[in-house]
Image (cartoon, rainbow, N blue to C red):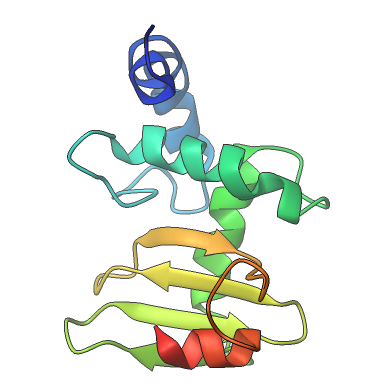
Length: 130
């Protein structure tokens, strides 16, 4: 049985990559999302949308999710930390939103942490524990 990532890479990513790059907030320049060894930038963004999109009911599609991640990086009201390797972490307790970015500001993930799913007693502790 074919895995979901393989199916997305083979069937979905080629159909959405160009349109997504054309309409995202960065005008199609640069990466819209981080890559992995097994997923292109677009495939990885789509997987994160499928995994976390339900946490953002106000967002209608993967493009809006990607835009939210890019905008969240620039949100001055969110807490921000930089890891020793340069990765950027953001957390906003008002919206309970957590974002992780490469040192170049490319989104790695965007989600709403849940203490029942991580080992910290609060989401603020989760942010500082990363």
